[in-house]
Image 1: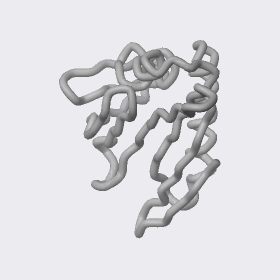
Image 2: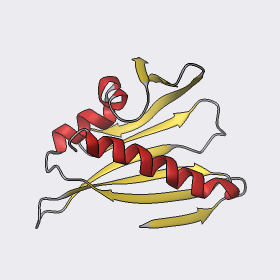
Image 3: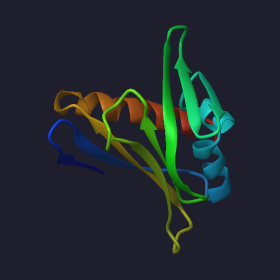
Length: 133
């Protein structure tokens, strides 16, 4: 499922992914801690206070501030090099009838980069699933 809502300079992209695990605490660990994010989101992740430093390969690094979270529910980060008002959010949903869990990803992109954002999240979530989630 993907939804887009345009803003003056960025498009909001919302994606949803089903997971195989039913353990919300395991998912929380994977999305809200540096070691958890390091296992699927980036090659290296470190954190100090509310600032997370992500690295990919030898030369790409970005920093994001954890701007909001609710334990076992969602995390919201703002890339420090992006415009104000943008963020990426990872939200856990658990179906009470089936006990299945899914992630809802909200991100922002330039209008011509929406397919790239989808592809990056598809790849990241595939890596998360290979970790058993």
